[in-house]
Length: 278
Image (cartoon, rainbow, N blue to C red):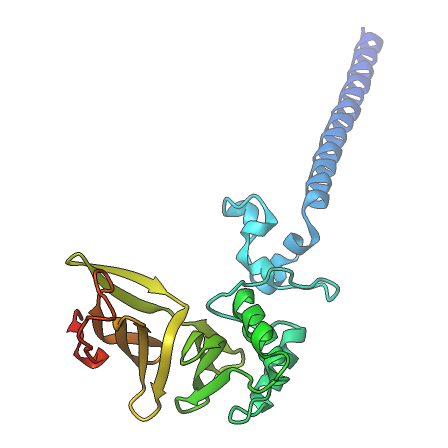
């Protein structure tokens, strides 16, 4: 009886040992699988996202962001071989990057009082005014090279109103105007727009335009820009704009409709005496 009891205890110990070995095997397999899943998830995270915590940026996966392009902070390039490819168009603001930085340095050193015909190509590449304006200018002045068609009107502290001539016939020209500032590390280059008013059939219409047509005269002392767009039959518009940094504000518009006017019989009225509609 005693021998039988000893045999049962020995069998029980062996059985418990076998069960422990099986449990250890199951636990080891489970932990190994979990570790492999974590490694796989970590390897699927882009390198620049893995390193976000080192520069104080949260993991986009925790903020509902699903793509790298949706993380603003990723605009910071950690790899020196990557370069910015997105370029702001015209716009109204030009920010130099890489090679353009040296262009800004060149612009700051260029004369603003003596601008040659040859200088215009540089300023065209820098300001990027409309191509049709540049083409029209080149068509008219490429032979004579008599003017750059550019005037920089100082507004103090490295700020300028820049007049860009596109073409000219007699006294009437076509122009673009820019606000240009060299006060910051990057330039401010804004293409300016103008409120244009007309009155026909008793109705006043208003449009915004960036191309100015007519006789242009900028008074540097009072910062007024006079635009007289007069037609041969003694009609048209006469507008005065005041420059209030960084844009032009309409000060006055006088207008005389051309409808029904016979230049041979109509009474001549000076433009400054046309009907004031603003």
